[in-house]
Length: 301
Image 1 (tube, rainbow, N blue to C red):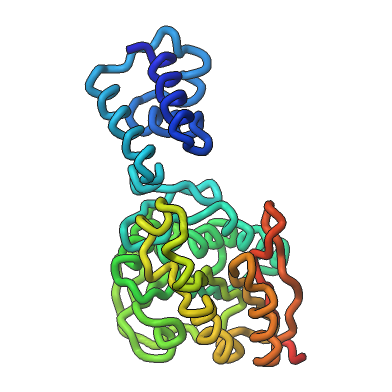
Image 2 (image 1 turned 120 degrees about the vertical axis):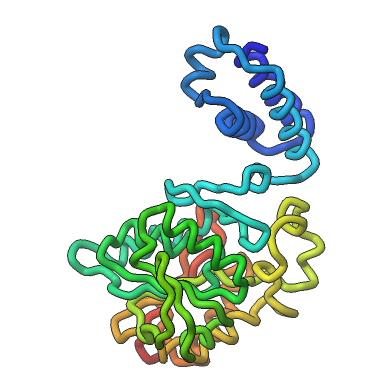
């Protein structure tokens, strides 16, 4: 079948099914299944053939997408901050809004002033930490996660994105992962030692959805993202209630923490920050105008 026509067919089917951005999804399907890219579709679409077996595969992918499976879950990969990340059933599918953490870190650290040590609590696929290390080439990172499967994926992504030798991954729950001796994996090596305890930059995209709300989420979220990455407890604040009490112990004197929050959690997280004596710099909004990232310094209130 001619490339141009299979592309049009997929866009139309996806649009009729109510899929957001059907043209983008169709393009990604072609790029994953064929040796063609967007420029081929535009410039040579009427002269390029697609093998019938590949056409069948692409139609099957369209059906999966219509049935609620995200494109990122069909191919188990996602682009984040211009880098390619592999995903699994153990990792959250990273969203573009989370890139705000990277943007803010680049604003706060510039020139020769860089975060020597970076901590990512609940690292998942490693997308935040690895993206930061791709920008801060002299920095070293630590990522923690309760899911060993997620850490396997993060370790793989670090190696694929060229920072495996500058990042360690520790299995454990939040701060507990740092505060005991663990077998720490860095690149291909594993050694038991006590890891860095003070960090210039601490980041996290913790689970922050109230458990009563999870069933109301879009099917492509609730059916495909791991519950461990979504469920923030009764009020959605369980993770923050663990992070704040010991944050000062691990944040360097001039360091900052950047924590992603839910759109309706600004006041609650500000209250927690005040309760534990932090100087809350600001709450940053995402492109939709919703509160997205809380920036915290180590100063007293």
